Image (cartoon, rainbow, N blue to C red; front, side, top):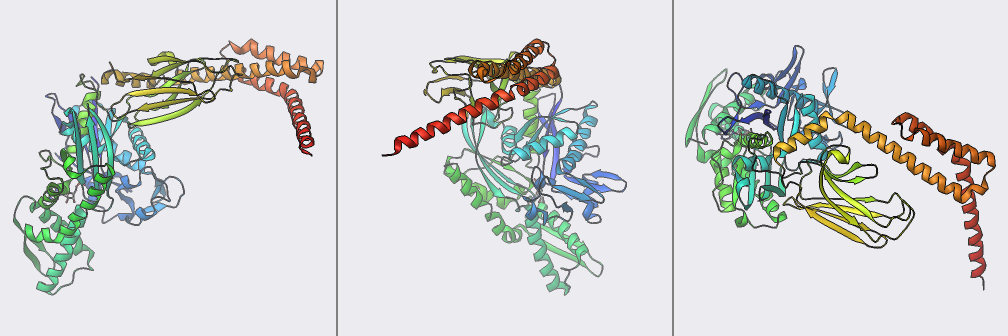
Length: 609
Ligand code: AMP
């Protein structure tokens, strides 16, 4: 069983987890026993520093210390202009991919994230005493393709293969075992240090579907801390007559003290804050009720997005069956009360809200590794789906890891003149050639009007519903003739097989691509030869005997290498044949144009009274 870890690559903190020998998901701590790795990377003259050490020197080295890099993943320079205002490091001006300037070099967000992933990888390797190469990584449900791809790139740079990119709310639900519900509606409320996300999910037969997401990318526990700091500054002024608001070091001290006091007030009714300043020591008792008054408006700001997400999902709060709390700030009792009031039921909170996403990623990793074989669990298609095209190659319509439900449409045509039927062969897998993939279904589309090759327009639609059922339909546009089939792509497929199929595609990648390119080159050669033969039959009389023999010579030359498997030779001779045929094509086009012009004149004549 190959080792696969689950990683929560967070905005503020990141974690790595695994499922232990007893089948229990656990966070893997670092050598000092710390479970959260601050998502901070510092580029210092002495080298790259990641985590707590980087966070500690943030104040000293703000221009070279990157935090919140997740906010920049997979985004363009233009998209992040507003975001860039919130950070002290420099975003290099660019229309394309975001680049962060650190001293005299520039780094991309995936490179920075890769440093975090590499640290987690090493943490896991130290724990297991063996190398780790594979991971399941979580991303917010609202991440688009580019952001997911950037996360995969980060993983690749770190030397980790991201077997799955899983939505954070899905992972949190997995940690609570909610995939076992036959059917249910889940709200995942995620309030961290600086971001708030609400996701509404539907689970049915182990398949998660994201119905709606909403949130606020700049709202979280940091705002609670800020509110408390403001209050403390006012109190210090009143009691000690000192205004510390423009003393950055004092404010920083207060912020650390405020955050610690806030955390204590989650489990205690009152706490004492003591901060020694140069001229005096500030001591103050704070009650939970006082804190709640300060943060009530902020907590209420999370409720609007919750209502909007419910509305988008077409649901009322009482229809939601399960509520999952994620993020450190959901430890605040007021937050829990408000969520409970809104949905009218008690949220799941047994698991550590900082760890729940990583634990769920570990559960998914465990399933992928074959630890749980009786259950295939997905909210994405585990393998690519496509159809066989000319020469036995696969044309993919829905790629691996696409979130379901999903639909894809593409147009195909025939390869032989007068062809009245096509064989639709539905395939699953990652290999380039049809024969190396799993055959899911076959059906015929018949009754196509006889037309020259390339003329019919056949629309092929793949539709996967939320239950993972795949419906394939082929429809010829001119006659409206259609045929379809329905299959369950995951039927009889275990996660271990899926992992194996994906692995095979990596092992054979180079040979597969070469085979595909050869077939494509041959198909192209075949098509050109057919065209030339047809053109010769129709317009041969427009050529001199010499020109004709030049074309037939080029045709013979191409035919001679066609079966050789020498792609360069086939391509070269195809180009030569095209070149030899140019005068013929030109003349045929001229003739067609002349004919068109003549017939237009005829029209004109007819129109006259
Ligand atoms: P996360 O982004 O999920 O790691 O959450 C970090 C936020 O959770 C920070 O604002 C922390 O201050 C806050 N937090 C952590 N533990 C507690 C706690 N016991 N009570 C209140 N807030 C907490």
